[in-house]
Length: 392
Image 1 (spheres, rainbow, N blue to C red):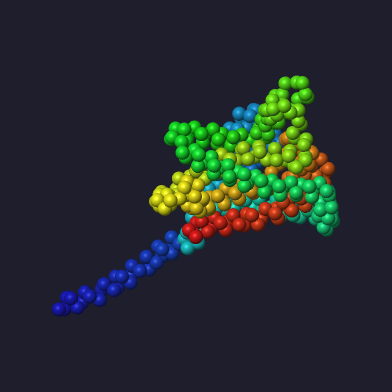
Image 2 (spheres, rainbow, N blue to C red; image 1 turned 45 degrees about the vertical axis):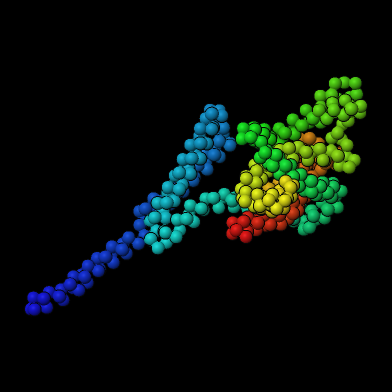
């Protein structure tokens, strides 16, 4: 009894002696580590400075690096090595902070370079463009709304808006329709035939807009005077049927030349639409399809009333993606007609105002109008993506 009574009070005393040690250890682990903090900060600044100056040197003094191979090697080393060094020193810097801060800061720190690039490449130029749209042609003095009054009083701008609206009406809808048709028909083929057909139709996606425009102008829309061999497919067929060769891209009646330009973009984008829509169609539960067939629905009714409602989200996604692309269309018009014969579009008109007419203010105003037109579509697309992710 005596020994047990005498030893019992010693245990709390032992715990109380160990508690300060544990607290001091934990507090030391949560404190700032000055050496690591300095190493991380200095290393981060030096790495960014070296990488930026290397790329500036490549831009201003390419002869220092011994040709394209040398430039490519330095760019790869500076890019990959710079990114690795930047994130490494950033990680050292964050870990040197108190633990209660570092755990929450690490995700944001590693997202910071990406957000910085977005700000530098996207947000800053947007703000500057809006700013310059209220300035004169040299961007040296403010002129208020004069640039906007000038472009809306210009017949070429109004014609470009009309053509852009025409592109918006025709191209996205035609791309979705042809994409659905090709996806459904390819799904009826054998596995090998489906792969070959889809690969062939998707192939134009690998061609640039400029390359595709050159192909169509040379092989399809080319014009030769009557009596000469017609190298263009369209004129060859037309003259073979008894007609006279036509300079198709000069015919603005009914906006025929604009429609012919749209065919090029549709040809390029059908493969993209086909891939997404084919995947969506394959994801439709076969139980619903079989149930509709048992109820007596024919194949068209099954597709229209069962399949289409279940791939509606994908159809909207493809439509909006192509729509945004169409609103900014430039390459095809620039290469083929350069806006002549009533084929002008907003992006091409901006290029002319900035580089030909040297009207930076009006060019910026044109871009701002295009930006305002694109924003509602992008907002709707973001809402549609969020609804899709939420399963609504």
